[in-house]
Length: 357
Image (cartoon, one colour):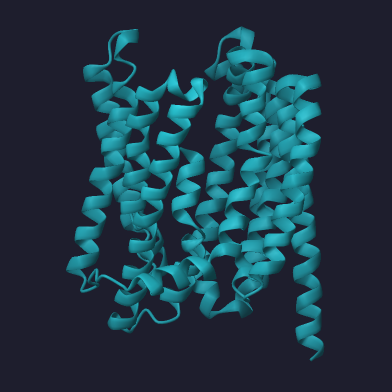
């Protein structure tokens, strides 16, 4: 489902925000961009669902879990319906928070009320999916009330939109080569127990990375108009990422022993390795997403992400095979380091060229 959500996003979370932010005072232009993005995402939902059906038919591994997959795919539908990028572009992100809190609260209540035995496992993805869809419907209703109307664009407009966003799509998709694929290989090579150890550590690493993602998405529409404030944004992110990384590294034993049983102590080293990668993840957000993409260098960013992810995949397969969950943590940190440092060097060079000219 992560792969399918990435396909549905197709880079619109960057280009849509950038384009709307630059003309947000023109309701007609914003409605045109909003319509084009939403219809493109729904077309990609149909493509993704067709691919899922094909996988279920052809691959026994997916066929055996078809009920979970088909129900979980509703999260992709809800994800396509929820225009969080639109709220970000017009800088009203509090609505994203409100919808997320309400949906997760409702989901949590449903879990306690309806899930009581192992046979109820299908209710978990069902509740999650319904939460996504309800949030999507509510968000679209609010945007309509603000005067932004959903119109049907021509197929040529949708095709042109998909073509223009291809570099951003590749930039968004290929990190799964070293991240999600490494976890997939971990399950194949070492079983669910190893996945559980890695997931325990990664939960807290995800909290840190989500924090940077929120900051990045908050500043993105502002920087699309005021790129001169990029230096301040860079310093703020680097200080925060270093602080959170050091905190997770030092408190890893306390975190793992507090939230997990004693047999999860191997997750401590995993969390410490992942905490180092947070600084490089922040660097990639600073100089890649919030500079290279904003300045129109999507192809450069695509190359950085593609080659770093491919190298991460090549390193990750033997690393995961030999070192299990520690290998996944090393692969993720190595790939983030490569992307962060590379994007920083390219961005700094471009800044020097622009200042010289």
